[in-house]
Image 1: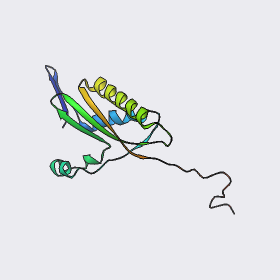
Image 2: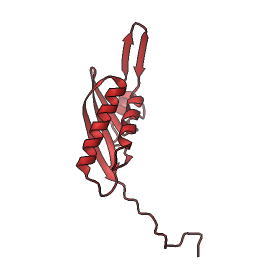
Image 3: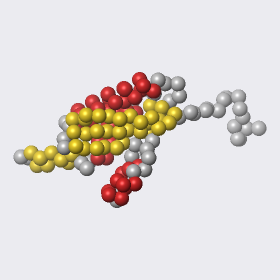
Image 4: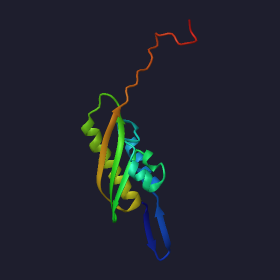
Length: 130
C-alpha cells in the first residue's frame, strides 16, 4: 500500500516506509516515549506481502484516501500513560496529514511496555576496577 498522486506534471508515490518514518519521528519527540516496539507479528500480511514490513512499529490501513495508523510504543517509567498516548495520537495525526496531504481518521497507540533502565551507581566498582 502506498499513496499515489497523479497530476498533469507526473506522478508522486509515497511509500509505506515514508509514512511510518513520519509517524515514528513525530512520536519520538513526545515526552514519555522511550522507544518503539515491533508489535505482534502479523502472519497473514507477511504471507500476502512476502516481506518483513510487519516488523515496523507502525501499521497502516488505507481505506480510499483515509488512513488509520497503529503505533507500538514503550514508555519511560513514571509517566501518565493516558497523557502520553493522547499526545502521540495528536502529533502523529498532524505530522502525517501535513506531510502527505491525506486524511488520518484514527491513530491507535499501543503501549507495548515500559523501559526500566537501572543505571549502575557510581559507588559500584566496574569490571576493570578492583
